[in-house]
Length: 145
Image (cartoon, rainbow, N blue to C red; front, top):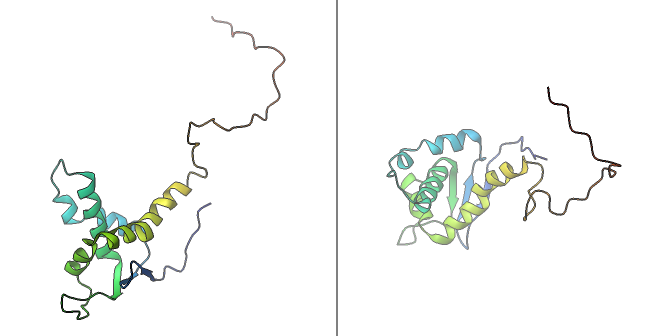
């Protein structure tokens, strides 16, 4: 079952001890816009999956982050949300991982949920219980003309 959030209100994400991000809903429009981000299009043809993941996370965050708390400069002064600040924040490994898990992964989980059930780990029919009664005899071969 797909669970719809019809309110589409921003929410706070507590990413690590300290920083909190106010993010808008993860929508199709946001993801499509992020995929077309110039930073992603500027990646070289043979870019690694890691480089693509980081560029995509930054593109999503630049569109989704509306406000933050607990983010400051080197002197500890609170800084406003800027695209450069978002990119710098996501360069911090625990923050990047938390953002991926708590925000971006929601969209991926929803994508998996639309399949209704996950495949069995060892194949599609492992663990399946037959419910049809056994046949009394084999079917005859169809005539060939």
